[in-house]
Image (cartoon, rainbow, N blue to C red):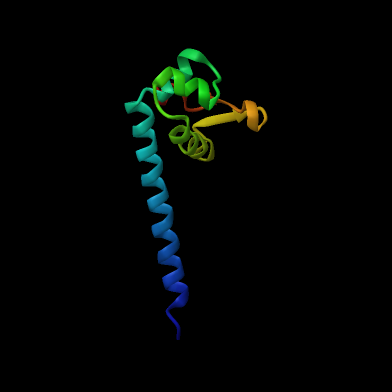
Length: 96
């Protein structure tokens, strides 16, 4: 009898748990640096606009913005050159 299915199951569960913790850490970043508040105050914004508003580098914001979209906290619209991000209505009150 092989242990491989059990190892795969445990590895999968650990990955799920670590993803959740990473999402929580990303939310902390959003709150600590005022990113959610800036999006709430200014409406849908590009990474460049958010950079100007918060003083953070656009190159640091893009990975955070992408992760927030994947987590369902932000919504993305527009094409690559003018991609805009906004708070998802479903989580807006909880994040502010």
